Amino acid sequence: MKRPRELGRARASAERSYCPLFAGVSGVIFPHMSDRLSHALLYGIFDTGYANPADAALIVERMVAGGVDLVQVRAKGWEEEDVDGLAGSVAEVLSGTGVPLILNDFPQLVPSVGADGAHVGQADHAVADARWRAGRALAGEVPPVLIGKSTHALAQAEAAEAEGADYIGFGPLYPTPTKAGRPAIGLEEIAEVHRRVSVPIFCIGGVKRENLEAVLGAGARRVVIVSGILLASDLEGYCRDVKSELRRNAGLA
Ligand code: TZP
Ligand code: MG
Image 1 (tube, rainbow, N blue to C red):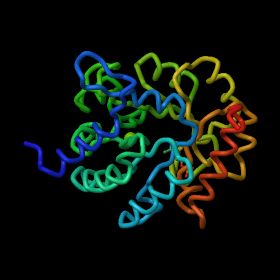
Image 2: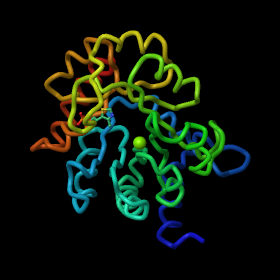
Image 3: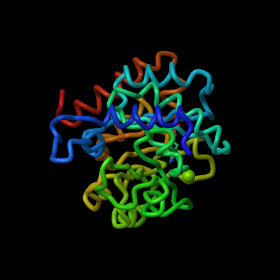
């Protein structure tokens, strides 16, 4: 039995997914959040390792105002019910913005939170399992659920696509305390992963406004930035700067 606030969130998620362009015979129309994903360049993460959960709404609002295209909630070591509460507050902020909300792990919380998907690591659920736990067993179901996967090598990137991931993270490019203990892979394989993999690739790990030019120069098109954004004194301006560089790189500005 869903609690009322959960129903409210699920409804808010459905409402923000509504688009008359996709009207069909059923009258219940969901555009594909995957369209949002395919145009996404900047992926921001609200990570409790860097930001006070009490500030989540304000921070995510600023991220969106700065042009972040996807938002993930990452709360390592948290209990499921606490993640549900935090992600629910972020879902409310994102409601009506069209910016998809992705949960790090916890695919089973996608329906109650009103999130749009989940992100899994190499040691987490398989993509199909995550999709099933999110209540949507098959890719292409409506409303769609986006399942992303972390990859740290070319072979893992190809495997994640073959497994049905909607997008991948590729990195860490640079050593980063956000993913302590995970060796950096450098920039050398960025161009090759873009040749081999068709789903959106978000380069991640130590990416900052300061090294973005080098990352894009190596062939990246989309990035995830965690600490760079969350530790910025002007978070919105930081996102805006990065986004405009990403747009320029993509030939959109
Ligand atoms: N996966 C690979 S690197 C990384 C994750 C979650 C952390 C990225 O964080 P930051 O602070 O942008 O380096
Ligand atoms: Mg994980």
